Image (cartoon, rainbow, N blue to C red):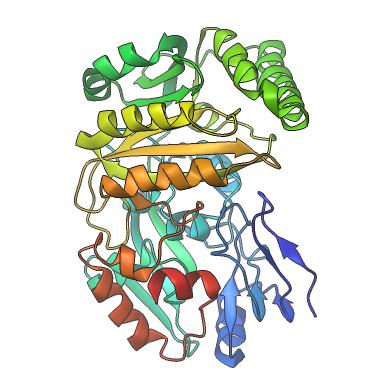
Length: 425
């Protein structure tokens, strides 16, 4: 029996019979071919049980690094974390055009679950993929791209680990760049009034709303030709370690111990926002250290529905039986053509709701989910939701194409687990 496993948020566990740590593509193929049931588990940063491996767990922690660089095209092994990849690209004078704010995920796990950042003219991480090598249930390796097995390419870029094991990912990178970062305290109504204009003129816009108040942290990141001027080490330590992790973690623990204080503490945190302006290498701006553990649900909704959904959510939060301590996050992405991408076929707004680990969240998440699904929302594949295949099939034009391809490539469902059984059927 393998060592018991649980994810970062402690919302999913597994006790695999065995854990494999292959160090080459041939070893991965051999392990996959002989296993009756196997599941790659990445870094465990999904909030759902998508990475749970009930039989054989495949851990690619020994299969990392860059294998090839050709101009702006970089091929990387699947077990490489985004943190490792960002450092490697930096050394090559390259960068990813867009990133989320967490870099603990493996590159394969990040694209497989639809990880994204924010930017009205930019897509999620999977839109930066130009080719994949996939090890199928038989152990055969297949390369796919826009010109090679295009249907497989459109499916596997957000493939949920249901089609095979990704061995390498080829990414279209950009020259390394500096971002000018501006974070300011704002009011929710004003941000919403200006949001369409903001997202049209700023490269990357997001905001974090403290839901028991109207307080918002508005983040605007724009490319600049000026040199990096990062926060001093002391200021960086104070802002991120002392305030965002240490002090906020303490506030969360107080709220968990004394639930009646939660609403007041959430308003207090919103009132304590201060401005922050600096510029630094792109991945150092995109990524934020997160050591306060939480649970999260996120839905992708049509951009046009954002104001209505937030208005309903604002009203619903006021009626909850419990308070919410962690802010709500709002981001945007450009439409894409990837079959199971949450931004497939439509410009998208993302709303993510959170709660500190150990605090009540079920009523909150259920109400949010009902509001979001009424707006034709699609749940993030790696974040908590209750949707099943019958629900999801109506929201993705290529859902049946994906499940049909899955049956062809993996007729015995070697790569399945209970989560995939629920969301794919």
